[in-house]
Image 1 (cartoon, helix red, strand yellow):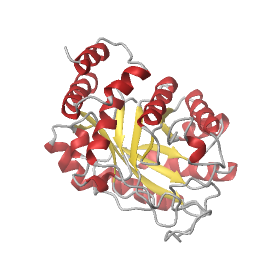
Image 2: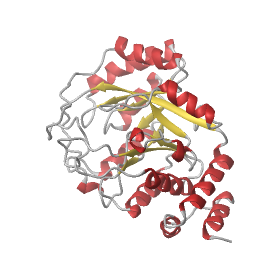
Image 3: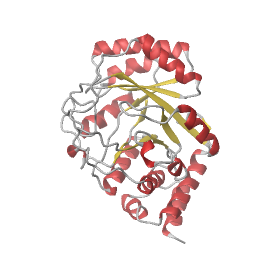
Length: 324
């Protein structure tokens, strides 16, 4: 019995693989790893495919110095657009548009370290309208909020909070210095205490090692995260990471497959940078991934909902909510 098969059977029996086992898995032949990860996905998640879109609800001039981000005020990039929190009508229009196309989740994402109490009150009214007038689920990414703020967001009708870990605890200080990994973890815990589900993953290609990637997902596993966004760095001119080499499709598939072994029942969600691999993520969807952010990203072009819906159908998936 090969090591990959042994680990697959361990996972299928309901046991968790260790950090050391995950590192060893990452070095196994890719085709065998992909096939085993897809088998785990089919067994643990069926053919469900959790699809969401995002809207840039507040843009630009961010106080944080995340080295990958075009919206950071610390860098000079081509992203010159800047605007305050969108109005309820603007957010509702986007929700209706996505709902009519079969999208399941609509995530409102805002720049900055955190929304103010006043902004939270404003966006709660928007969430109430969206939930009243559409059937789409609302997710939020509002920065480092506290439990009280999350409770208001939950009461307004949101179901999920997104806050990416970005990388491992050890590597994160090389990515951002204006907030800490511990603040991110507390944000996720506060959201969970408020009764919201949590979504947290990271970006591959920041200069981190495979061990860093595995440690990030292990932290997510400890937190009970069941939605793992996998972003592939799109090197933005003007940011410190502008010279980073994008991951190859094979590297992305290997990471996705290992992540599936680590959290076998998760929605492993291809996110930013998917268009860089050339096949719109198809190989990753055959390697254990079963969710995606569709449409445009915050400051870069994405893949259209119509294209994704056709791809989902071709691969034998069915768009449905997971982990509600």
